[in-house]
Image 1: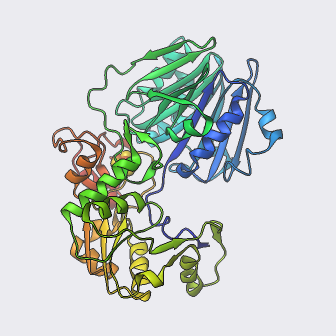
Image 2: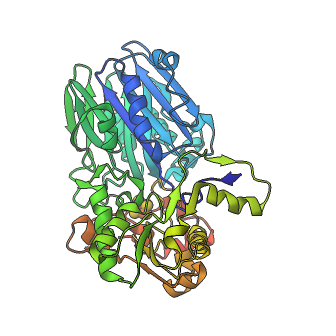
Image 3: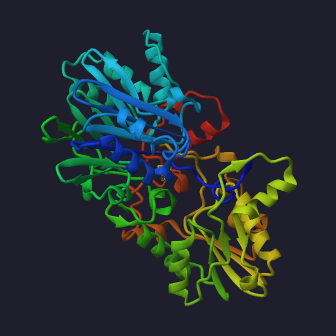
Length: 487
Ligand code: SF4
């Protein structure tokens, strides 16, 4: 396939997005709108499950929300005032309809639907044990492990059984679940993946990002706290539980600020747009350069480039123009055409760049193939000097918490130091924001070395949890991983 998202394919891929509504007429239509606002978190598949007081209804499909859930007939099938939904990019489990969420099961206590953002890092071990004990899995998704643990729990109430299941899983999970008793929203004790709560009239809404509230006209109330489990029961009563005790050292994902979340969202109480501008300003302080123009790699490099330009006083210009009228992929017959595909989506603004010294700003470098192409594109457009500045520290380690990262050996920063990376992408200079600079941009004085305030493992290797699934595998990458520090 020829990708027409050349600058997105060399990124860490977003995980999943979840959205849930309790107590609104046409809840599933609202979920469809919310999922549409979260589409950037997963473009592979989408699903919605609703409860009409008697029955559960579910529609799951491969592809985007638009095209699957913009149809009155589909929304009419999803009757009821309670609904939850999911957009997915597969992080665990093959791409198949059976893995599309919300997953649904008929338990002894009744129907149970679950939408999960994150990744359970001991899912393989738990799955092996459950299969030995006779469990029959319907999907290859890590999320199904929670359903089987819940089904086998010896506790009496559904809530106790759910908590019992969660106490056995490790890793990252933000969950929205639908039961006959109400809606449950829950975040893992470290709060690795985001989850926020809002209100629209009498209706209570949960979503991965606040941008989804804006789209449906809801008001942001607060985030679901790390380790918090909120139950909205039929009748609209809200109950907050702390099944894991107080979460003293949350570790939310720092990459939400760098790239995953939409710039118009508020994450961990901070405007994502402002943080990204702040990272750009930090970059300008730490790695100044004598240049004529600051140019963002669209779209993710734009806020940091504005920050860099404002801090440095160098003019901000759009030196790469992005076409908005192109599909995601199409068949390509050979390498020559693949290169043309890059220019279909993004093209150099030659009249601006010719003869100029430019600073290119991007959010991250993963494999480095994209950076190489962009630098080349700038040189072909006549740039006199091309200086690359990156609004995150070097990405040296894989993520095990619901983000698709290439294996470590394929990460450019794992193989090379900054000087070697600069030579690889053919830039005149290359610099990354420091980890301390990134923390400062988020509003922290410094990174707490003993107990970091965020998960930053893809930069530092300081994983916030044990990684049970990877302890007994002979894969070289995994063994390397075991030598890394778990903070
Ligand atoms: Fe986020 Fe990186 Fe941690 Fe994964 S390893 S949760 S991408 S900070």
